[in-house]
Length: 282
Image (cartoon, rainbow, N blue to C red; front, side, top):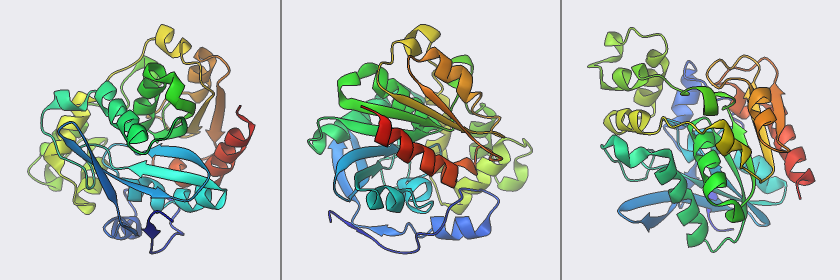
């Protein structure tokens, strides 16, 4: 094995109102994070298992540990015979923190993922992103289709085209003097989550301001890799998975029953759907 994953692997939900989730998030559950440099940015990543590679790209204010290790995605995929690579995005986790919103353009963050694939000498990889990570994955699939064998957009539906996944109030919540000062009902849970995971809130504010790009209908129609769009049925952040899938040739939509944006990420329907999608794609 390329690294060692230790700690509990049975955590299946990503919920900012769950004290147990926060506690586990503070103890990443993995050791031997590797690092490489992409320009001036140092990217931390884990590389586990053997077999066909899949690269995992986490969401805003999360990390590889919170998004992929604790909800047992790494365990699920390695047990399914996959090599799993998961990075901490710039501004997050153990990677370099930046404070200029321009440094967080989705195209730049997609290039971090492409550079990681290059660093590991992987010719092509399946790529799965969640929320902001799905946006990054879409930019990657559009810019580098030869490097992306398939793309899974978790927690991001038609808002990839029609709107921004997170409003500016989230950045303002990060910059508020304290959690008690955050009155916005949308920004408050993200601020609470950032505090519990001891994130760099200044970097997160810059990130949310800098990574709010959309793709046009014409652009998503040019994505030619196999695509799975997986969104919770109660996710009002992502927008419809069916509407987005209808714009991408051959894309499939997966609605995760009864799950919102926070709870869909670890759901067994999502896991089973992803494994079936990977087994069927060319």
